[in-house]
Image (cartoon, rainbow, N blue to C red; front, side, top):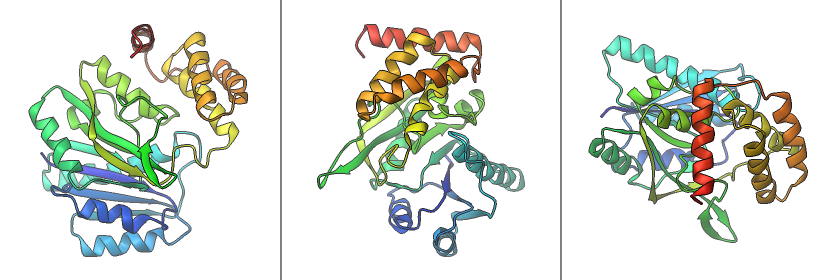
Length: 285
């Protein structure tokens, strides 16, 4: 199963060598790693170039122009620069990609990461999306990043079956894209899972550099998915409690209300999402 991974990179020089070494050290590496330098102003570009020179399966796409810095859009725009490059390779070399990954440049993978994910896809033809779990360093120990339940396939370490990726329409250029893809995969009948034994080191905790305004923008993500008012309220309370920032509940609701008609899924898909969420809440899952 040919596995291509796309990694957007923006000013990650501090830990890029450590991250890329974990990709090289895989027992079963991905077949192609496309690094998209999204206008970095630090030494990221030079570091990426060195790795690409050393390994033929690593490619670098450079851009002096940064993606639009809007919540949820920047990383998806950078991803699609890499995806366009991948499509060109497919046409030129009659290449058939079976698995496509979207990874961030601040994750350190266990050595058997791709081996175990590939095995999961090979054993289950209905598996459309999977990953390991993210861990952050806290008081000298690596602990699970409790921003989401362990059933959620997190944005920095996703691997899709290509047929699933195509059926869900790829990644939506909006805040909440990394939840929308999982919902749409389930909507179309694909299975989604996480391999709990695969512990990935997340070098920068999610929202570590987020402003209160960026956190409140989660209300926009809930609007994109068609959560509705009550589900949005409950989700914002949960996030506010996690980040010890209850002010984001009111500001998040305001953002939700302003964007409540900005669906990034169909009404039928939004109904599926709400029904699934309520089922999860009522069954305490």
